[in-house]
Length: 256
Image (cartoon, rainbow, N blue to C red; front, top):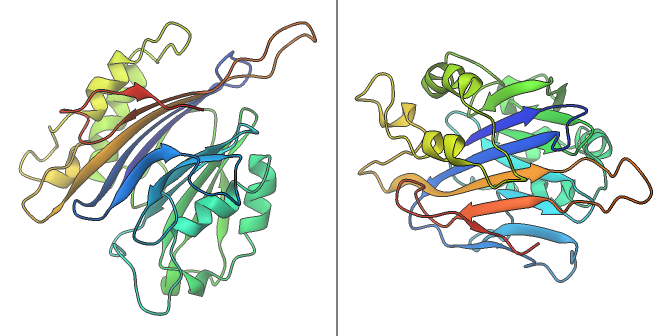
């Protein structure tokens, strides 16, 4: 049960801004984003040391991908492949549309249910696998321009207490300014432990429980637009990573 926020601004110098809190069993081992796969040297991603995949990654073509479990599907299941493999498979592609088309042909029964987000500077897609309750295929939806949230339910589904409580706040918050390093408004929201209802820890952005489950890391990513002239120098993407709960850990740049 993770949280992803994506701001799409076609025509802007920074057309994609993404924020993601990873919620997981706190004893599940992982490594911070890096180039962990010799057979995929163009991929920067966090490493899930238990299954070998990742929850969020970016490749040198400017494509990002992230995976979220759907309701009631936390953890592995015998006979099912790891959903962390799907992010790496998406990052084998150069463009979001290409990745979405390829992964739409997955066998949904091979995995537990998931939400998968793929985005580049031009387009973004949300792929949904409902598992046994679904239509027998992976469904693909375009993420619209503007600000959207994705958790363990559908995109912008306000029956999710987290989306219902935080989407209006995010839509009125000042957007990040990657050029100036201005991320404070989103950092404060990602670190918030205030949910509605207040006694539901899963309604907060940063989750803290006594069940051995909670928010274990946080990311802020910005994708730049392509240069507008041949003489212009391309901007690199920005990835800031907090290696723990964002209410207790600072964000530092990832070496891309």
